[in-house]
Length: 402
Ligand code: B12
Ligand code: SF4
Ligand code: SF4
Image (cartoon, rainbow, N blue to C red):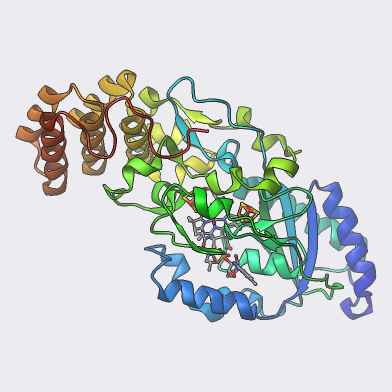
């Protein structure tokens, strides 16, 4: 392990990296120098200044930090960008009235799964090259513009939906990074184009793609159902459709995915390994404690919004589906859930579905939380007006149901 790093040829090291990364199951491998991400940084600054980062504290960090790999590791010389397909297949039809889960979250928690392989990859490189490698390995976790670094490392091009697209496997892939103190021969930046296509912008249910490559998180269903810890704004709820965790619409409509999406070779990302494509509403809406929630979703990405956040999402999805089957569970939430966020969204859902006026009146008498009381009163007003706002009872929700 004592070999001098400067005696290792960047081309030789790059070749070994390719070999080992492919063996480890990564579909895409690229390298860029550990230098500031100029254009990415400028785009990030404009995005932050426009308020599009919403309340994601980690995205309000200084641009100089998020756009410079050397801030992660002073001695960094290269950024290794890796892509791994998580595509678990097509979404089955929602015949059971479930809460839809975005594909990247059907299986095990990708942070843990990928990190383990990244560290193994580093160890193998160390053995092959006979030197210790100082490295930071991560995916979707550390302050670095991963798409920008990956584009510079040749993994793909920026789609109008802002996702990184590879001409061969589409965009359903995670990006993982190894920032290393090793000189590796860099790749050419990724190229490609959307041509005249604007499908993702036209079909985004909430109009969140404000300009090519610019997503306003405040409107994005992925943000609203995962990172957002507060209410889902009333005017956006009907547009969330049956999504209970994340959203794939701007990728589903993309011709690159229609033609090229390649099923993941990692069994950990299959629906059988985790929560799968749909949540059973009655079950999730009946989870009353954090312990129970932790046990049910441990090791999957669905722990991210917390118990109240996930129940909030299921309330909205059930309301949009006009799910009569979910009414007892929603009334249970309204009656006994300790979170005002859950009670308030349950009231909204019951107002959308109709027929729960008695339960809503009872809840109005008991409710101490001001925001929640407002939701209950509004649901009662909507019920007595005979029609829910947004859509007539029984009508299909606004967002794509696949
Ligand atoms: C914050 C965040 C979100 C936010 C904001 C998303 C956004 N578009 O900004 C929310 C919660 C909404 C979100 C949603 C999703 N996310 Co997210 N998210 C991130 C995170 C942590 C930071 C992204 C960021 O910096 N946003 C700020 C903007 C300014 O940066 P950007 O999106 O990276 O855009 C850059 C490029 O697109 C480029 N660019 C865009 N257009 C153009 C055009 C040209 C000409 C050029 C030169 C450059 C360019 O400039 C931008 C700045 O570098 C990254 C992980 C990371 N650390 O990078 C994951 C990440 C971007 N997310 C990922 C995924 C999988 C998703 C979802 C698909 C999950 C889901 N199914 O619900 C959705 C996709 C929604 C979408 N259309 O973006 C993957 C994307 C992989 C890929 N192939 O692109 C990442 C990389 C995580 C990972 N390690 O795999 N996410
Ligand atoms: S993830 Fe959904 S809501 Fe967000 S930009 Fe894409 S289509 Fe729009
Ligand atoms: S749907 Fe069309 S515009 Fe959007 S990312 Fe795909 S190719 Fe580009």
